[in-house]
Length: 328
Image (cartoon, rainbow, N blue to C red; front, side, top):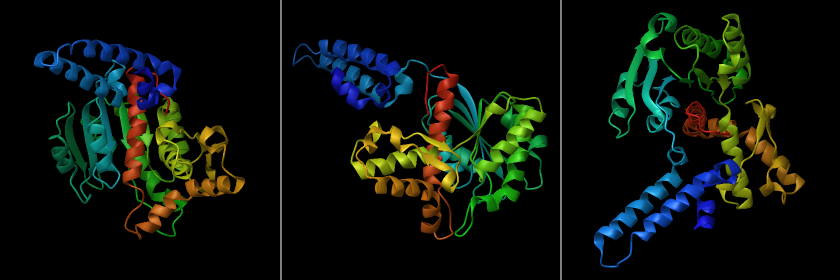
């Protein structure tokens, strides 16, 4: 059983998480003791219930750790291509007790509509929508939305189109990020901000300077580049056939082209690759965002995969705030 759990439970690759499996193993053994007589329905039902709970905890290590937070999260740009699936994922997170969906009234789908839709999920999170007109200032209008937030995710701004570099978006998107970050500095200065605003390489340092001038901790502002790690993990899995749960590619640098540096030498699964495969894999990771933009033919960029990666980042932050040691 112990070996089975080690195979199932990805987090147990880390020594610090082994207590999770040990605890579950003890609970499984206890549950199995209950099934003594084949004809004893109540005993067998108790056994199956215990096993179900244990396996559910394996699938959700947040719950297995025995700590569940109760945090307020806001998604700014929550009615957009990244924002909607990101809100869907965050609304399901067991650490989220309150989710605010904010967007402009010019969004294709009203923020209140997204919030109402998500409010029907059978999860604990309370969901509410907020909308501003294009000329409204978040600094003046988002007090209720942002006050008390622990995490603010910002998938806002214009997406890339074919032929555009991320830097081409700087003028417009930096202004959008600035308005939101200024409002966060006023209403939730202790919140962690996850910026999904291209070009991340330029927008994040600029917003950190804004926080410094306000006397706030610039380390609260993070650029969400988790998608580069997600992509690298998947591509290594496809090349090697190794279980994707066992692959964890460290990616350093930035979030644009050659600034994306997957450290493949640190990945055991990559040790058998040729030099040519390593070079090709580097480029595949670096160009993956452009591949999506081109594949969508100018009708969007990486939205679903970015929402998934943003939710992974958000979950790591909330786990940390809940006192669960987390690496993301």
